[in-house]
Length: 118
Image (cartoon, rainbow, N blue to C red):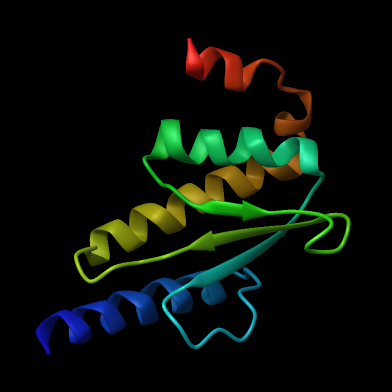
């Protein structure tokens, strides 16, 4: 029972945090939290590598043709062992990568995957 309670505390905190910051997370009522962003498929790899390597956040990405062109769907799955501090760190990381996405930095990066794999 405590793990379930912890899970939903974290889920509600992260989903409410995304909504308060203006992110579109659709109408989810499960722990799987979609975060919709707008950009091009070539930007997605750089964004998710940045999240993982620089912020320690793993998420999966869904792009065209599964979602419309220009839409990036990132899926976050919080767990019962995450903390409210993890939630805040995740929200701050998303703010940072969203700003980078808007600035075009991910479109202009080349070789990110190669440098991570080296």
